[in-house]
Length: 208
Image (cartoon, rainbow, N blue to C red):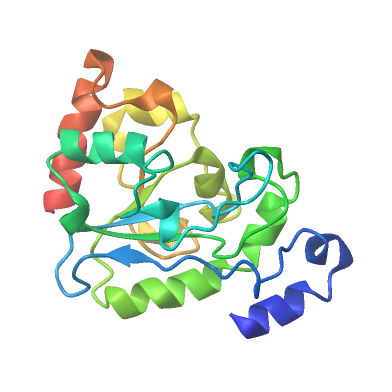
């Protein structure tokens, strides 16, 4: 991580985005049992201005395990709908460090994210050497960055309407893993009847 941060600090417009890593240490990945989990869950980054415009420090990614579940609540609802719980997941962010701008307002997020993909791939390979566990991608912006150049990226709704499009094959993305859109946005709550086929497909993908 230090080497990546060192490189980023050489790029003025990206360096200006970084928060002080001493004051804001990156949250830890979340996992109950690193030897026994079913899926990898991938978030964007820990950046937030949730404390009246100030950053709330999160001990773990999405603040999982703390009393404040606002960041992970919608994802957890979707996990439960397909019969997964906190004991079944390993959760990490693509960008592990805090920035001065939240993801949705960060125009340089994609460029920053590209610096961290190889780092994340190595972490996932340590935790899952088989590369068989699917990565549940919680935002379309993350998926867009991960796809290889020239690979077709569908609209979010098209993945959900056409479940046979998932999982996305390892050779089509930079993580070299099976990727599954698993979006946090309320439009893609799996409890909705219109996403029944997608729910069914997810259960098959995760079992296999």
